[in-house]
Length: 262
Image (cartoon, rainbow, N blue to C red; front, side, top):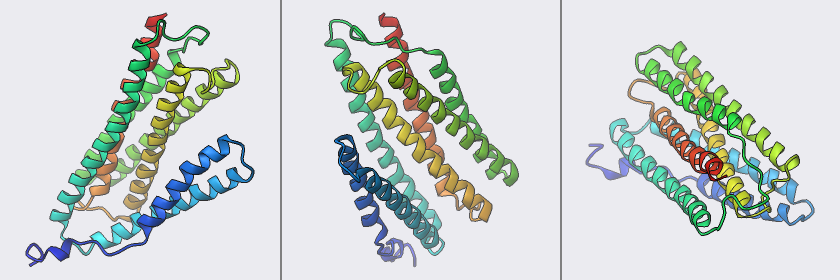
């Protein structure tokens, strides 16, 4: 009867999506106000970010409660299909950034432009190794969970989260060194704007991935997952692998090709 009645799969109306969209829209708008030096914009930006996080958490909790009353097989198929469409849309955004980078690179007489510092590759290479390795630890976490080894699954997941945090820390240190010591700021030229735009956007995705993994760990601790009911775990895994692949392309395009152009 559940498969005959299509309304069985319809989600319950929720106010969380409009609140989340409003919060995220405010964040983007307020970032520009902060850049322009508008008073109180920083405080409003922090409030908008907190609102977005609260709305995301509320929406996630609503979905988790709702799914316990729905047909798991059909719902998993629908959510998986929708999530891959989401990843495809994210890939198109990154594609536009790569297009900007390569079009700017090949239309310039020299690359990087004169006066730009040479980006060191040692620390980014170590960060890349850490991030790529975290994909393996996440795979081991999922495999352990499916074998009903819950403690091992949580331990591997915690290690994955820690490796992601270390990666972000290394990226933040590099940003601080380049902008504060080397004078390599976002307004220095086309090369610097591409660097900060692409690595910053990727860093935001790593942050989102860490939030997803943390929510997955929390739900593991609560015992909410079963062998058939763990779509959010798989979604977090897919998202994390996507973030890793994008970083490999970024590392090659920004750091390795930059070094070879000197």
